[in-house]
Image 1: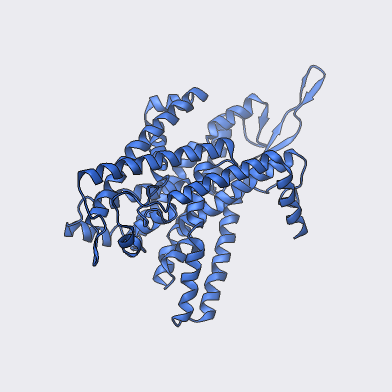
Image 2: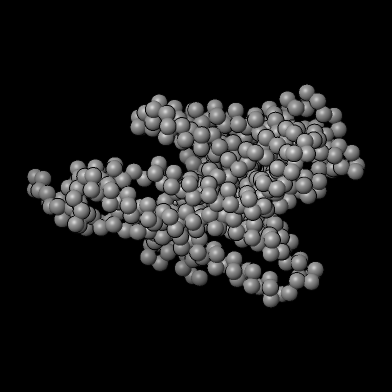
Length: 443
């Protein structure tokens, strides 16, 4: 405990790190404030419980969790940062099939700037599309006290689309500022704070089931099981397969280089949380389209039986998409051919494996083998909330039991901790770990 206290004291001592943390906290507070400002033309008093009840346990309930309740509040930040994520997905998919985008990815800083610009344009287009769905949903929602939107029409539709799109663009800018001037991982931290904001209420809802007759022992078992699942997620997130690489000795001038053994750390979950976000963004699309047909009985049956967040059909499709995107994103993020070429240029080789194509095939084979259990684990964790809901756990708490929320929280927390750790080590302070580094997060 004294070691942990000393670490936090060291954080306060470093002026740059302290300013970065305070700057990040200030912008995250702005995000939370925007999640409680209701859209113009919407009756906040009638909205309070209606949207929450209609979204609980559904795909929109999961979306609402990502934006920290902004969707159920019909807030100006109701779309959250998800349109930006969706736009990034589209650009990355285009980079895999269209030569122009492939060329941009290889042009270094200039190419990255152009890709960022296209991503922003895509964010605006997707935000406008999703905002149109929100307009239809709000305008068609009525309560015993009257409609949520007292005066629907063209004026309300246009103002809502403009405000929601501007809110998403503003959140995208906040995320970029956190990345550049804050602690880093701006977009991820915005999603992270939205998820964490609902955690206390979810725990209270679950604990209240004890008053409703549920056994205390059952609740204790549920919380203990959640602890084991969190530990498993951390273990898989940090798990690596190290491939030894030897470098031959080279004499350049009066200095001797090489002659050492290093390792290529292949992570079990190389793709991180991106497969979950990719699959989730695509699974949002049918529900968004369905909102344009609120009176269709066929669409209603299709939505409830096939694309409901708690249906087994949705879980199976969702799980298969996660496995696919795990391999897809791993192939984008890690290229064995480039690794083999770099090793060959630097005089490195894997013992027993010839340099060049044989090395690339060897690394690719290992990466494929360790990605399979990682992708299956991600799929199981992602659909686990559905299982827990069917076992009687409240939907809000079940979303933290596993699924996307847990993976994002663990991944972002570890990455943010690593950012703080690097600042401490640069100034010769001990970090949060006794060894002075986060094992499994470096390399």
